[in-house]
Image 1 (cartoon, rainbow, N blue to C red):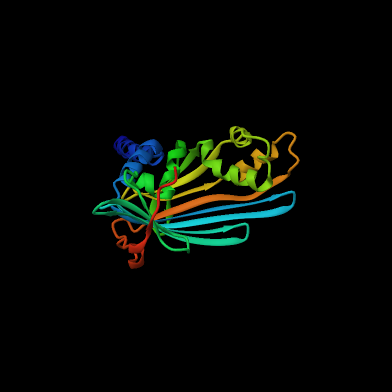
Image 2 (image 1 turned 45 degrees about the horizontal axis):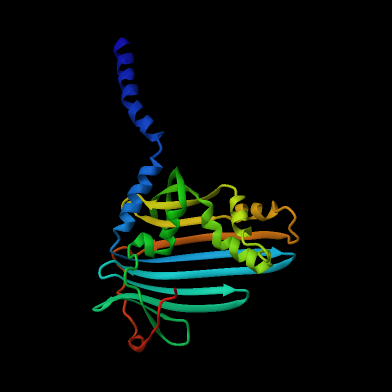
Length: 273
């Protein structure tokens, strides 16, 4: 009997480290630092981002939708970006290329009226600076580990992100401009931003590669609170959707960025400013 109890004790003791490990969450800060380092070392990839804002002001509906798909190459630096938009019922699309040529780095754009060419010499070319969805991470002030999960058949770490208020600036500007709330005031946007509640989103990091594969932000509730707490405003704003999301795919497998043949005759223009 004593031997049996002793053996049971040893088995229980052996299981304790495993049980403890199962109950320990990964360090979100470490995961995010490693993931951002890996993202900045990407040599080529494809990426997409979608931004949707839907609100009513004095019962009038407004919809802003923008999307962008990109093909990125680090060496030599090249970026193809295709943008689509739905703004006030008007749709739009454009395509641009930033490519390294023998005489420097050039930006080519075509919004439907022909190609234009502008010098892009000295432009920041890293993934964190050129891939739209990764640029969101520059507005992150904190992170918290949520759990392991599966995203598009990939095992990933799901990490909750806390965003700085600045991430909502363009959203607030769109609403303020559309409703005319900015008339006679140069500080209304900043004042509204200062009143923003905490803003949260999620980042998904692939377990195997430690690469960021998705970032998403739902700020509907936060923006609603901003506009519902305005004192003395004659405009009633209700936000039904404010979402930003994007994916990074095809790391190391992106198609080549090839400038269209007709872009070679692009008109050279000076960069604004």
